[in-house]
Image 1: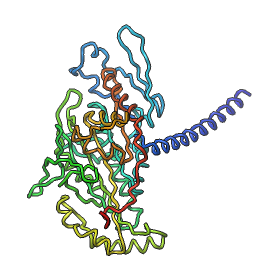
Image 2: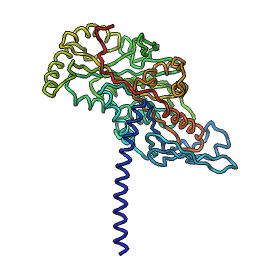
Image 3: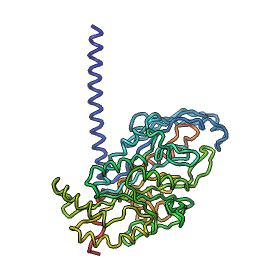
Image 4: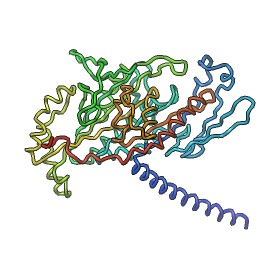
Length: 432
């Protein structure tokens, strides 16, 4: 009799659990819709596992903090809550909680993290800009989350274990997968890689006369339309994810790194990888499936003759495409629509003041206080769907830094920028 009751109770528990999971997914979907309507910044938080260097001696921290080596104080209470145990000598421990759109515990994989990022990428081909940036202290797992493991000898992507690839390579693979489902010849992708170091912008894909990559200093300006732009920045056309990885690997060779007490190869610069997707559309926006096929055939012929397959830099690209708008007008009213995916590995907290100003609705937002915030002005200011990936260390000795990151993420969630606009207009038109 007891076994029968236990069986029925287990069955009931399973049914309730399944209903709970379904309702939780519905609630999350509704919440994400509300976040999108308000233009809020989506904030996810990833807690890395304890690592060998957490227990190593010689950290630049006070003696009283060194007594708590490898004491874990930050946990994922559930998939939306971070629990932090805050304690001081002679005082009772206090638990503090922080709520985010998604929280990852220390055992969740790179694939799991990316599953929550992937839906944003569909927006790119629907006409929206997207920006994904990682924020956190040195050694908290930002670069691992964004890039994945890097080879010590050349700091490049390690493709030996694809399960550990980070958001940047996975996002590119997903973008090209989505493009493969569209009419052939209707899209092309360009990539740029820059680092911001000591408040200077360096083009990591620029080449000398011998074809050798070297970092060239660039500047960021505001266009007459009020958008941020980097003149002469190198944009390379890529046709698949492998070409993208090869290019970004070249750029990573030049990324500024200095050893720290936490990380032997700590990156000391902000890394901004940008994918620009140009879509060729007709006036009827591809209409029916039969029309799709007809337009696809035209696009294959017209786009291949109108646009180069490879470009070396924005200067050569601009000159070779100088007549493109006119040709597009002549070619059955075809138009260009550009959307942009920015993938950012932050090394500092320059964005804090900017987001604070937006949250407080100040009349002046200090974008131009740094090259980084000027570069990211469009994305942070509301022209892109923005996901902030907080990375924190669980160890007691990093408590202060983790609390600062969690506080920043909490403030970022409260920013309301207004609904992000869809890019449903041609880049070039007759009206000026």
